[in-house]
Every structure is written in C-alpha cells, then in structure tokens.
Amino acid sequence: MSKQKRYFLSEEEIPRQWYNIQAEMPNKPLPMLHPATKQPIKAEDLFPLFAQEVSRQEMDQEHAWIDIPEPVREQYKFYRSTPLVRAYGLEEALGTPAHIYFKNESVSPVGSHKLNSALAQAYYCKQEGVTNITTETGAGQWGSAMSYAAKIFGLEAAVYQVKISYEQKPYRRAIMQSYGAQVTPSPSMSTRAGKDVLTADPNNNGSLGTAISEAVELAMTTPNCKYVLGSVLNHVALHQTIIGLEAEKQMQMAGEYPDIVIGCFGGGSNFSGIAYPFLRHNFTGERNTRFIAAEPASCPKLTRGQFQYDFGDLSGLTPLMPMYTLGHNFMPSNIHAGGLRYHGAGILISQLLKDGFIEAVDVKQTDTFKAGLLFATKEGIIPAPESCHAIAAAIDEAMKCKETGEEKVILFNLSGHGLIDMTAYTQYLSGNLVDYEVSDEEVARNIKELDKII
Image (cartoon, rainbow, N blue to C red):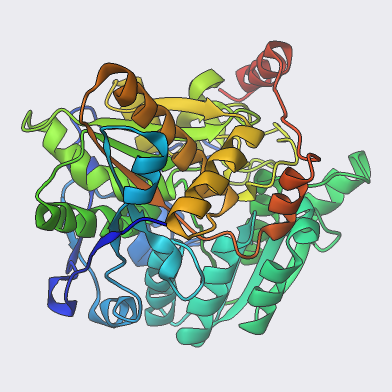
C-alpha cells in the first residue's frame, strides 16, 4: 500500500453554516404540489409531517447560507472534520496522471455521511417538543444514523427497512436496534400501505417508495410524531453540504481544485453534499468543474428516467415533486446497494441535470464491486456498495486521463464503509453476484402510468 496524504480541519474551521443552493440556482425548480389539490404547497403545508424548521428550509429560496445550530455543530465535532485523502495508491495502480482525492465520510459513528442530516433533523424535532419520529431505510445507513441521532436527542424512533435489505443486512438492523429503534421489514402488515402491497404480492421484497409510505402513514396517525427523511428533499441536501464546504477548505490546503466531482446517486444526499458547494462557483463562471452522479444500471432514473411530476412514495401520500423518475410504482432489482434503490431524484438535482449543470452515468453491479475491491487493496478501506459506484466512475475518469495524458484533479465522496456489507463482497468473490438490467419496455410501461397523475 502506498503513502496517503490526509487533510483535516480544526474544530474552529468546521463550517458554521450550510449552503442553500436553491437560493442561487439560475433556474429555480418547479414547486412541489399538494397531492390532493395539485396546487403549489407552502412551508406550513408540510408542518403536519415534518418539523417546522426543516419545512421552512425545504422551501427557502432566499437565504444562501443557513446557520448550523450550535448543539448540532457540537455533535459534528465528534467526527468532523472528516479527512480529505489523496489516493496515491489508487493513482499508482491505475497508472494515471490524474490526481485522485476522496472525502472519507465513513469515519462517522455510524459509518456513513447520513449522520450529518440525522443530527439536524433530530435536533429540530426535539426543539419543537416532538417525542417520536418515523422513517424508512434501504441498506440501513440512514436508519442507523437516525436511530443514533434520536438516542442523542431523547426521541423514540421507528424505522421501516426495505425487506430485502432487512434480510441481506442483519447487522445494520442490529445497529438500529442497539440504539433503541423499533425496526420493521417493509412491506409490513402494520400499515394500510403495507397491507395493500402484500395483498397484491405476498412475496414482495419491498422498495424505498413502499417504506416511505409506511413511515409517513405511521407519522400521520401517531400523536406527537414527525417523519424524517434521509435523502431526496432540499433540506437534507442542505445539511449534507457540510461535506463539500469542508472539502473546499481542504482542497485549498492541498493546493488544488477539482476538475471533476463525483458522488454515488440514490436520491441525492451525498452527491448534493459534495457537489453543491463547488457547483456555486460554476454559476458565477469562476470555475468549470464537471459533476458526475453515478447511479445503478438497475435503477437508472437520471440516465433513463423522465422529468415529470411524481410521488415520492408508492401510495401517493407525499407531495408531487418535479423530478427525473422511473415512476413511483417501479420496483428495483435486489442489488446490494440498497441506498440507491429509489425510483426518483431530488427536485434540485433534477433541475440541475435538466439545465446541464451536472451529468449522470449508470454502472453495473459487478463493475462497482470490482472497483471497490481495487480501492480496498490500494487505500485500505472497504467501501459501501453505494460508494463503489462513485469509485467506479472516478476510475473511469482517471483512465480517460491516462489515455489523453491530462493531469486532472478528481474528487469523489466515499459516502460510507462496507464492513457490514461483507455478504455482498463474499457473493462477488465467489462469482455469485449478478447484474440487473432494466428493459426499455419496463421503463416505458412504468413512466406511462405517470400520465394518470397530472
């Protein structure tokens, strides 16, 4: 293993504000619509479901900088700043002239970037006097983060975990339970949404859209309870910008600036977190950085989806959102990157893709694990299956530099470690991991259903 160069910030240098990109986007996103009236929603329309402060943050198109509450920043100090690392080992293995850096979010207490927003949302719920929270999770990274944050701020947490991930990743389930959360495989018989799915398909393995429906339903029917979300929405992306804001300072310490910024993509939380702070300089013309979202070939909403209003959940309980989507009825294949198995993209990401500010690529499952293992052997960190998508895209860009001789600077977000995902690695190493492809017919059929919505 070759040398590594790591860059850290002092406690005083940890950002005191999040960056709200929607205040500075050249084209503002279309509004979310009320699921019943189809009229644009206001912040107060979200109050029954979300904490009031995050509802206001969700709709804020005025303030580019939003203060991080001091109790949240104090919790950040337990693991932030996370290191920015020059990946010399990977560079040497590839024989590329590119300089490759990664922001290592795997060092958080729960092993992923998800805690950045979980702590903020738990704090705002506590400040409002909420006692219970509900949420969903795919691979379990968000569920683990929210369970930990709930314990920190004295809240009771109920988590609906997508059934296939509940079965594939028992240790993530155990982590959530260790922090005191109630974990239920979704679809379940505990909600009307879950019962409807199981009645139609008793062997259904679940989806994030289904789990969201169940969590929302429980929140709406439980006194003094709020729903919290780990990706997709604007306020989640806001909280995650702590990643890119730190990385910007750390790149200055390294004396470089990224030509390419890459993140894996499910709903948009970690990609937004690493990309938005750098993207603001493209808006002004100061920089011309490329931004690449790497999604699974089996769930290709950015590369093959349609930009249209759609629900964020299976049952149509959430607001209608203008986004790139495969349709809220889409049931993704059982890939191990459970955090990326979501049918749609966030509103801001969708608008930025539509306007050409970001790019998207899709990656096959076996290619991601091949990239992840190379990274592990050269940099010493076994990455989460989700993060392997970003690594694969970074390797692809680095190899292009090898062909052209260009010495580009590549930055990607290592969103989490894979130490609880060794079942997936074992399957890959034994040759039992397969690729899933979505047919054009399936995409077209699912998207056609959207015509019934609006």
